[in-house]
Amino acid sequence: MDQILTNLIIELRRGTQILFVLDALSESQYGYSLLEKLLAKGITIEAGTLYPLLRRLDEQGLLSSEWDTTESRPRKYYKLSSEGQNVLKALKNEWLTLSNEMNILFQGESKL
Image (tube, rainbow, N blue to C red):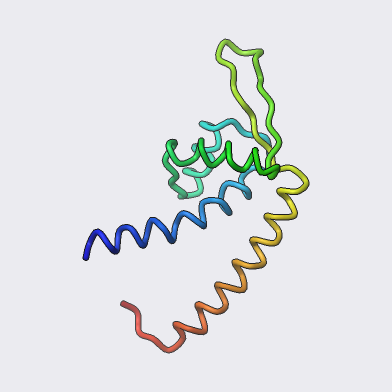
């Protein structure tokens, strides 16, 4: 039963990570700086989850990216594209709707 619960929690969190990442990329960030920014807000995403997510969002046109090769170590910077801004706005609205529905569902239940 513990493994089932763990898998369900991971699945639940996976959808929210996209929202966190899109929201955090209103300013240009490279992968590690994004990890630090999210961690400072109390949001933990593993690097092995973040980097494939960034590539996928970039391929979907939700992010724009460019390489900075001026430093000794090249870094790929990501920023929310205009399409990404539209998607983020829609996702935030959907989140608020879901949150309201969950509040209604749980209203009156005692805390676990």
